[in-house]
Length: 341
Image (cartoon, rainbow, N blue to C red; front, side):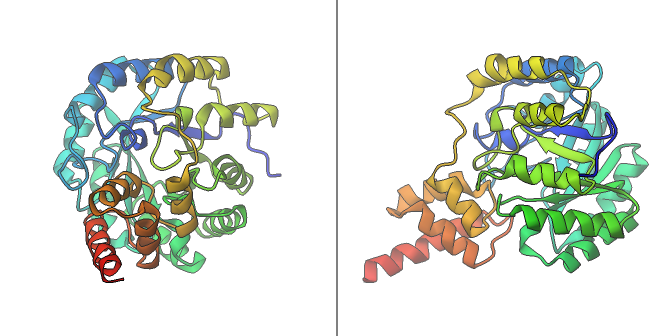
């Protein structure tokens, strides 16, 4: 294995962004303060805070937030003494205006996120983030759905716009370890910037895939305490830290404190335990965007359909993040077809 020197790996904790999907975007300021304070005390490097679909995501289409995300960003920044507050921005959902506002409230890192074949829409936002003095990374979603060659091509575009690194984002939790290995290796060989990896656990491979990414030289890694993230959640941060410690990789984060906050601070927020259930499993199997689960379950109840059938059809149609409106269209068509039988 290619060993990383101590503290060369930087972890971004995404429970206060990806986990927003799980709580239907109903985080309170008190919850954000408590989680961010505990993560900061444990030595977490970056804490991502925003709507589950990034800056500007609080809409009827994606789900309305209980509290304006700018208030949540400010709340996290107020209690973080060492961790950097991060945000996610998907061009077309979030704007440069919201990026500037988040920066003014204390956000120091932004991941500019696009579908894996649409990096060209990120140029303005990456360039603006660099001008604002933010750490700026590209975030290529649904990385399983494009060839390695296409992934490299798109990552190079983000590098040319000024990104300081590019994440391979397994939005559906559909990648197998060999797929992670070839993608990270290809980016490491093709880019002069850092490579990151963001996993989902829909096929129970998040930790294994993350370790594979680290083996191939990824230095930016995402985790979520208690797997608090869309679908079956992300790489469980405290479990990953324990494994890294056993491997002799010290990232400077206190494992015991992470265990404690997972139980005592994040645990009470969870509406239910994060497990691989039939809905999240079929998302990994079909290669469907992880935040689609709640939308598919609602549509299933409305049209008396099995949500798995909706998700499988979305997979066939190669639906991507931002196409939540397609879920109702698919459900309507399936219900009409069912009525004709």
